Image (cartoon, rainbow, N blue to C red; front, side, top):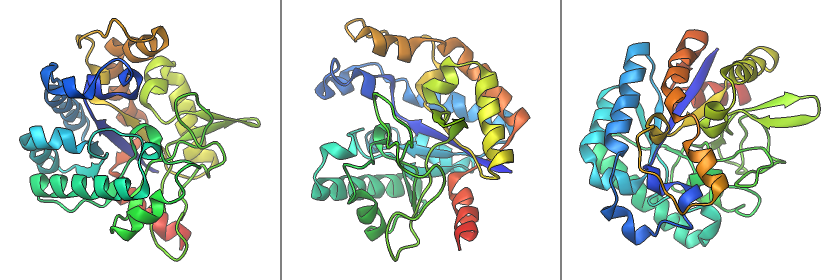
Length: 281
């Protein structure tokens, strides 16, 4: 079974957990670590022979075009993460259309590669944004991986399907949610990020095996470059819960990532999309 490995390319100060205490106007004055951290992620992937999808902010691509080119030169997929990490439900439909169009142009101009995939910041396509998938399909995107089919205090669309589905009537456009596991009647978040970093590796291995073996479906796992950077600056005035989620176990993340290719097979999301479309045909 080929699973999808993905990286949400954003810097430590752009995360949703800190949006209430870090002003966007200050981003250009803060220490940027996204380039070095993403390069470190690519080195981990090269060691393991893994190809992945890098959902990249337009803001990052504008400032580090050489990084975008290194990603595609290494054989990875470049996809859109929106321009400035705004949640989709904070946009009007027209604003969302403008944001994804702007970001796609930046990514395609810097990478020289067609951009066909999208991931909403903070998995913010949910029941409040029934128009988002339609706009993505209208603009020629082939897939989205923007839905977290769980109940969570930060995001989630608990009633969404767990696996790939077609959200737009009459369109081949695909939504591929991040992975969840099932424990009796309870659906558990298991798609990576903080859950992968904070919980024992055995939990993630169990969840991926459940999806692969019991459901016969690919897992979709994500993380961020800042999660392998224990030396990143500390935001002292952030809420305690946000600091705990963001900074805990940063020093173990790289070793956990090295274990994934030993236990499972991984590929780019655009390749998984082809297989899932065939499954749904």
